[in-house]
Image 1 (tube, rainbow, N blue to C red):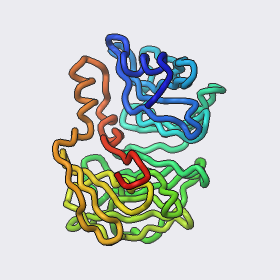
Image 2: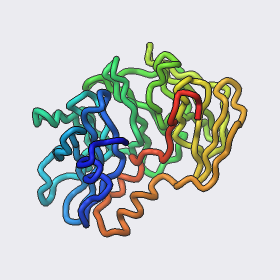
Image 3: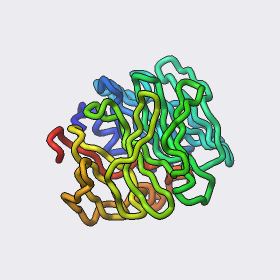
Image 4: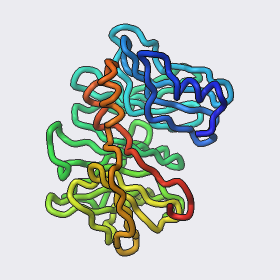
Length: 279
Protein backbone atom coordinates (compact mmCIF):
# COMPACT_ATOMS: atom_id res chain seq x y z
CA UNK A 1 0.00 0.00 0.00
CA UNK A 2 1.30 3.43 -0.91
CA UNK A 3 0.79 5.13 2.44
CA UNK A 4 2.30 8.23 3.93
CA UNK A 5 5.73 7.67 5.34
CA UNK A 6 4.66 7.68 8.97
CA UNK A 7 1.95 5.07 8.58
CA UNK A 8 4.19 2.86 6.47
CA UNK A 9 6.84 3.03 9.18
CA UNK A 10 4.36 2.00 11.87
CA UNK A 11 3.04 -1.04 9.96
CA UNK A 12 6.27 -2.24 8.32
CA UNK A 13 8.83 -1.39 11.00
CA UNK A 14 6.96 -2.14 14.20
CA UNK A 15 8.60 -1.82 17.57
CA UNK A 16 10.28 -4.94 19.05
CA UNK A 17 7.67 -7.22 20.57
CA UNK A 18 4.96 -5.99 18.21
CA UNK A 19 3.54 -7.14 14.84
CA UNK A 20 0.81 -6.02 12.46
CA UNK A 21 -0.94 -8.49 10.12
CA UNK A 22 -3.78 -8.36 7.58
CA UNK A 23 -3.78 -4.65 6.86
CA UNK A 24 -6.79 -3.40 4.88
CA UNK A 25 -8.19 -0.03 3.82
CA UNK A 26 -11.81 0.96 4.34
CA UNK A 27 -13.82 1.88 1.25
CA UNK A 28 -12.70 5.51 1.01
CA UNK A 29 -9.06 4.61 1.80
CA UNK A 30 -8.95 7.14 4.62
CA UNK A 31 -8.35 4.57 7.34
CA UNK A 32 -6.17 1.48 7.52
CA UNK A 33 -6.71 -1.29 10.05
CA UNK A 34 -4.56 -4.27 10.98
CA UNK A 35 -4.51 -7.04 13.55
CA UNK A 36 -1.97 -6.14 16.22
CA UNK A 37 -0.01 -8.70 18.23
CA UNK A 38 2.27 -7.82 21.11
CA UNK A 39 4.47 -9.70 23.54
CA UNK A 40 2.74 -8.74 26.79
CA UNK A 41 -0.73 -7.74 25.59
CA UNK A 42 -3.81 -9.43 24.22
CA UNK A 43 -4.24 -9.33 20.43
CA UNK A 44 -6.07 -6.21 19.35
CA UNK A 45 -7.04 -4.26 16.23
CA UNK A 46 -5.16 -1.08 15.39
CA UNK A 47 -6.66 1.62 13.17
CA UNK A 48 -4.51 4.25 11.44
CA UNK A 49 -5.51 7.42 9.62
CA UNK A 50 -3.75 7.23 6.27
CA UNK A 51 -2.77 10.90 6.36
CA UNK A 52 -1.60 11.13 9.93
CA UNK A 53 -0.39 7.71 11.10
CA UNK A 54 -2.35 8.04 14.35
CA UNK A 55 -2.92 4.63 15.91
CA UNK A 56 -6.14 3.80 17.76
CA UNK A 57 -6.79 0.47 19.47
CA UNK A 58 -10.38 -0.77 19.60
CA UNK A 59 -10.24 -1.54 23.31
CA UNK A 60 -7.87 -0.58 26.14
CA UNK A 61 -5.13 -3.19 26.07
CA UNK A 62 -5.18 -4.10 29.74
CA UNK A 63 -4.23 -7.38 31.36
CA UNK A 64 -7.06 -9.87 30.90
CA UNK A 65 -8.67 -8.10 27.94
CA UNK A 66 -10.29 -10.59 25.57
CA UNK A 67 -8.32 -11.03 22.32
CA UNK A 68 -9.80 -9.27 19.28
CA UNK A 69 -9.48 -11.27 16.06
CA UNK A 70 -10.51 -11.29 12.38
CA UNK A 71 -11.47 -7.61 11.86
CA UNK A 72 -13.66 -6.68 8.86
CA UNK A 73 -14.55 -3.18 7.69
CA UNK A 74 -18.25 -2.28 7.74
CA UNK A 75 -18.15 1.52 7.26
CA UNK A 76 -15.76 4.44 7.21
CA UNK A 77 -15.41 4.54 10.99
CA UNK A 78 -16.63 1.13 12.11
CA UNK A 79 -15.73 -2.53 11.79
CA UNK A 80 -16.58 -5.97 13.12
CA UNK A 81 -14.15 -8.10 15.10
CA UNK A 82 -14.39 -11.37 17.04
CA UNK A 83 -13.70 -11.34 20.78
CA UNK A 84 -12.36 -14.64 22.11
CA UNK A 85 -13.88 -15.23 25.55
CA UNK A 86 -13.04 -18.74 26.73
CA UNK A 87 -14.73 -21.21 24.36
CA UNK A 88 -17.01 -18.50 22.96
CA UNK A 89 -16.40 -16.17 20.03
CA UNK A 90 -18.39 -12.94 20.25
CA UNK A 91 -18.88 -10.90 17.08
CA UNK A 92 -18.76 -7.26 18.11
CA UNK A 93 -19.44 -4.12 16.09
CA UNK A 94 -17.05 -1.28 16.87
CA UNK A 95 -17.28 2.40 16.00
CA UNK A 96 -13.69 3.35 16.76
CA UNK A 97 -14.29 7.06 16.09
CA UNK A 98 -17.09 7.41 18.66
CA UNK A 99 -15.75 4.66 20.95
CA UNK A 100 -19.00 2.64 20.81
CA UNK A 101 -19.51 -1.10 20.52
CA UNK A 102 -22.31 -3.68 20.54
CA UNK A 103 -22.56 -7.48 20.48
CA UNK A 104 -23.90 -8.91 17.21
CA UNK A 105 -23.54 -12.72 17.45
CA UNK A 106 -22.06 -15.44 19.67
CA UNK A 107 -20.89 -18.97 18.88
CA UNK A 108 -18.82 -21.80 20.33
CA UNK A 109 -18.07 -23.21 16.86
CA UNK A 110 -15.04 -22.72 14.62
CA UNK A 111 -15.46 -19.54 12.58
CA UNK A 112 -13.74 -18.80 9.25
CA UNK A 113 -12.90 -15.65 7.29
CA UNK A 114 -15.80 -13.31 6.54
CA UNK A 115 -17.02 -10.97 3.81
CA UNK A 116 -19.15 -7.86 4.11
CA UNK A 117 -21.66 -6.54 1.58
CA UNK A 118 -22.13 -2.83 2.22
CA UNK A 119 -25.34 -2.27 0.24
CA UNK A 120 -27.24 -4.78 2.39
CA UNK A 121 -25.34 -4.27 5.65
CA UNK A 122 -24.70 -8.02 5.51
CA UNK A 123 -21.88 -9.87 7.26
CA UNK A 124 -21.25 -13.31 5.70
CA UNK A 125 -19.16 -16.02 7.36
CA UNK A 126 -19.02 -19.79 7.85
CA UNK A 127 -18.96 -21.82 11.04
CA UNK A 128 -18.73 -25.51 11.83
CA UNK A 129 -18.49 -27.63 14.99
CA UNK A 130 -15.02 -27.72 16.46
CA UNK A 131 -12.98 -30.51 14.86
CA UNK A 132 -15.63 -31.18 12.18
CA UNK A 133 -14.86 -31.61 8.47
CA UNK A 134 -15.65 -28.88 5.96
CA UNK A 135 -18.83 -30.58 4.72
CA UNK A 136 -20.40 -29.58 8.02
CA UNK A 137 -19.67 -25.89 7.44
CA UNK A 138 -22.70 -23.64 7.17
CA UNK A 139 -22.85 -20.07 5.94
CA UNK A 140 -24.39 -17.36 8.10
CA UNK A 141 -25.67 -14.01 6.87
CA UNK A 142 -26.21 -11.34 9.50
CA UNK A 143 -27.93 -8.04 8.75
CA UNK A 144 -27.52 -6.00 11.88
CA UNK A 145 -28.29 -8.47 14.67
CA UNK A 146 -30.76 -10.53 12.60
CA UNK A 147 -29.93 -13.64 10.55
CA UNK A 148 -31.08 -14.00 6.94
CA UNK A 149 -31.88 -17.42 5.40
CA UNK A 150 -29.82 -18.88 2.55
CA UNK A 151 -31.45 -21.13 -0.07
CA UNK A 152 -29.92 -23.50 -2.60
CA UNK A 153 -27.09 -24.91 -0.51
CA UNK A 154 -29.03 -27.46 1.53
CA UNK A 155 -26.94 -30.53 2.40
CA UNK A 156 -23.66 -28.94 1.28
CA UNK A 157 -20.76 -27.61 3.24
CA UNK A 158 -20.45 -23.92 2.33
CA UNK A 159 -17.47 -21.85 3.43
CA UNK A 160 -14.87 -19.18 2.59
CA UNK A 161 -17.02 -16.37 1.12
CA UNK A 162 -15.13 -13.88 -1.06
CA UNK A 163 -15.66 -10.16 -1.41
CA UNK A 164 -18.70 -9.19 -3.53
CA UNK A 165 -17.84 -8.95 -7.24
CA UNK A 166 -19.43 -5.93 -9.03
CA UNK A 167 -19.00 -7.62 -12.45
CA UNK A 168 -21.26 -10.45 -11.19
CA UNK A 169 -23.93 -8.20 -9.66
CA UNK A 170 -22.13 -8.36 -6.31
CA UNK A 171 -22.30 -12.14 -5.98
CA UNK A 172 -19.78 -13.73 -3.62
CA UNK A 173 -17.68 -16.75 -4.51
CA UNK A 174 -18.16 -19.59 -1.99
CA UNK A 175 -16.54 -23.00 -1.69
CA UNK A 176 -18.89 -26.01 -1.52
CA UNK A 177 -18.31 -29.67 -0.76
CA UNK A 178 -20.50 -32.73 -0.34
CA UNK A 179 -17.69 -34.77 1.22
CA UNK A 180 -16.63 -36.26 -2.12
CA UNK A 181 -16.50 -33.36 -4.58
CA UNK A 182 -15.44 -29.76 -4.02
CA UNK A 183 -16.23 -26.78 -6.20
CA UNK A 184 -16.87 -23.07 -6.44
CA UNK A 185 -20.36 -21.61 -6.16
CA UNK A 186 -21.89 -18.16 -6.14
CA UNK A 187 -23.94 -16.59 -3.35
CA UNK A 188 -26.35 -14.03 -4.82
CA UNK A 189 -27.20 -11.23 -2.34
CA UNK A 190 -30.48 -10.64 -4.20
CA UNK A 191 -32.49 -13.07 -2.07
CA UNK A 192 -29.37 -14.81 -0.70
CA UNK A 193 -29.50 -17.81 -3.00
CA UNK A 194 -26.60 -20.19 -3.61
CA UNK A 195 -25.84 -21.88 -6.92
CA UNK A 196 -22.97 -24.10 -8.04
CA UNK A 197 -20.83 -23.09 -11.00
CA UNK A 198 -19.12 -25.49 -13.41
CA UNK A 199 -15.83 -25.13 -11.53
CA UNK A 200 -14.68 -28.27 -9.70
CA UNK A 201 -11.42 -28.15 -7.74
CA UNK A 202 -9.11 -30.50 -5.87
CA UNK A 203 -10.27 -31.62 -2.40
CA UNK A 204 -8.87 -29.33 0.25
CA UNK A 205 -8.92 -26.24 -1.97
CA UNK A 206 -9.88 -23.06 -0.16
CA UNK A 207 -10.48 -19.31 -0.47
CA UNK A 208 -12.03 -18.67 -3.91
CA UNK A 209 -11.17 -15.27 -5.33
CA UNK A 210 -12.81 -14.11 -8.58
CA UNK A 211 -11.03 -11.63 -10.85
CA UNK A 212 -12.45 -8.12 -11.03
CA UNK A 213 -13.79 -8.71 -14.54
CA UNK A 214 -15.62 -11.85 -13.36
CA UNK A 215 -13.86 -14.22 -15.77
CA UNK A 216 -11.42 -16.21 -13.62
CA UNK A 217 -11.33 -17.73 -10.15
CA UNK A 218 -8.27 -18.52 -8.05
CA UNK A 219 -8.16 -21.09 -5.23
CA UNK A 220 -5.38 -22.27 -2.94
CA UNK A 221 -4.49 -25.72 -1.69
CA UNK A 222 -1.52 -25.84 0.64
CA UNK A 223 1.33 -24.12 -1.18
CA UNK A 224 -0.29 -24.30 -4.65
CA UNK A 225 -2.38 -21.57 -6.27
CA UNK A 226 -4.64 -22.52 -9.20
CA UNK A 227 -6.42 -20.15 -11.58
CA UNK A 228 -9.38 -21.40 -13.63
CA UNK A 229 -11.83 -19.92 -16.08
CA UNK A 230 -15.09 -19.33 -14.27
CA UNK A 231 -17.08 -20.18 -17.40
CA UNK A 232 -15.94 -23.80 -17.75
CA UNK A 233 -13.45 -24.51 -14.95
CA UNK A 234 -10.47 -24.99 -17.27
CA UNK A 235 -7.11 -24.53 -15.54
CA UNK A 236 -5.12 -21.64 -17.01
CA UNK A 237 -2.35 -21.30 -14.43
CA UNK A 238 -0.80 -23.10 -11.49
CA UNK A 239 1.64 -21.34 -9.17
CA UNK A 240 3.83 -23.37 -6.81
CA UNK A 241 5.48 -22.39 -3.54
CA UNK A 242 2.65 -20.17 -2.34
CA UNK A 243 3.21 -19.24 1.28
CA UNK A 244 0.70 -21.36 3.23
CA UNK A 245 -2.04 -19.45 4.98
CA UNK A 246 -1.14 -19.01 8.62
CA UNK A 247 2.61 -18.91 7.98
CA UNK A 248 2.75 -15.32 9.19
CA UNK A 249 0.99 -16.28 12.42
CA UNK A 250 3.56 -19.02 12.89
CA UNK A 251 6.36 -16.51 12.62
CA UNK A 252 4.61 -14.27 15.14
CA UNK A 253 4.35 -17.18 17.57
CA UNK A 254 8.03 -17.99 17.05
CA UNK A 255 8.78 -14.41 18.01
CA UNK A 256 7.13 -14.94 21.38
CA UNK A 257 3.99 -12.90 20.73
CA UNK A 258 0.63 -14.09 21.99
CA UNK A 259 -1.54 -15.64 19.24
CA UNK A 260 -4.65 -17.59 20.38
CA UNK A 261 -5.58 -20.73 18.38
CA UNK A 262 -8.81 -19.11 17.11
CA UNK A 263 -6.68 -16.76 14.99
CA UNK A 264 -5.64 -19.57 12.62
CA UNK A 265 -9.14 -20.20 11.28
CA UNK A 266 -9.73 -16.46 10.85
CA UNK A 267 -6.49 -15.75 8.99
CA UNK A 268 -6.88 -14.25 5.52
CA UNK A 269 -5.60 -16.02 2.38
CA UNK A 270 -2.17 -14.99 1.14
CA UNK A 271 -3.17 -13.94 -2.38
CA UNK A 272 -5.50 -11.55 -4.20
CA UNK A 273 -6.13 -10.15 -7.67
CA UNK A 274 -4.08 -7.07 -8.52
CA UNK A 275 -5.68 -5.68 -11.69
CA UNK A 276 -8.88 -5.52 -13.72
CA UNK A 277 -7.35 -7.49 -16.61
CA UNK A 278 -7.41 -10.89 -14.89
CA UNK A 279 -3.83 -11.01 -13.62
